[in-house]
Length: 276
Image (cartoon, rainbow, N blue to C red; front, side, top):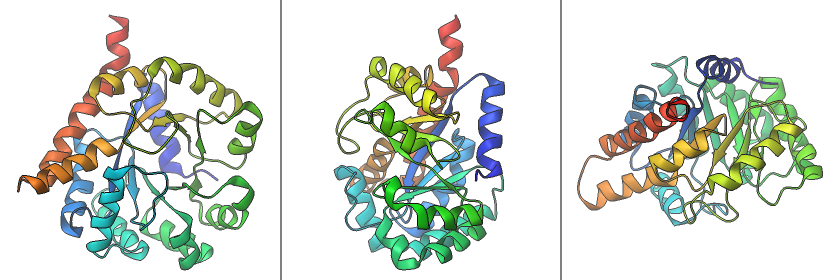
C-alpha cells in the first residue's frame, strides 16, 4: 500500500528530470516550537519529502549527532504521541509535502501497531521507516500500516546481497532507502562511485524509487548522489546545525533552513550541471 502523496511527489520529480531532497530532522529538537518552525520552513527551503525522527533513548543505528538530538527531543517531552501531534500541527499548514517518520520499534510496540497506524494516518504521516524491524518480524506492523494506507519503507545496505534485496523489497512501498555506508549515521561520508551500482542493484529488485542516505554532508556530495539516485537524504549535518546554534546562542531554525537550502539547491541542479 503506497500513499498518494509519496507517489505523486516521485512522479513529479521524474517529470522534472531531477532527484528529490529529503532532509531529516528530529521531533522536539531543540524545543517543540522550534521543531515545528523548522518543519514548516522545510518545503520552502527546498525539501521534496520530509523525514521526521521520533525520539528514542537507544537509537542503535545513529551516531553521536542524532543520538544527542534524540535526547534533546526527549527532554522537550516529545513522545511518539507528541511526535504525531507535531505532525498534525504541521499538516494544518501543508497538505502537499510527504512526511515520513523514522525511528525504532520499541515505542511503536508500546503504542500498539493498530493504534499507531491509525493515529499516524490521521495525523498526516505518509510512511514509516522502522530501523530495527527486520522483514521477518514485520508482518503485524505491515498489516496495520497497510490497513491505514501508510507506507512501510525498508532499508537496504552495502551488505545486503541480491537474495536479501528480494526480501527487503517485498511489501515495501513508497520508496526503498539505501544506506550508503556500513555503520551508524554521521561518521562516514558516502562514496558516490560505490553508490551508483548499488542503486542499480536495488532497482533490479524493486520497481520503487531509491533514496540514498547516511554520509551526505556537503552540497558537492549531495549533487553526486543526486545524479544516480531518485532522492538524497541528509540528517546528521542538519542536527549538527541545531547543536551549533545552541552552543553559539544562535537561532537553530534559520541555521537548519539555510543548510537545507544549500543542499537542496545542489540536488536540484545536479543533473542539469551534468548535461552542460
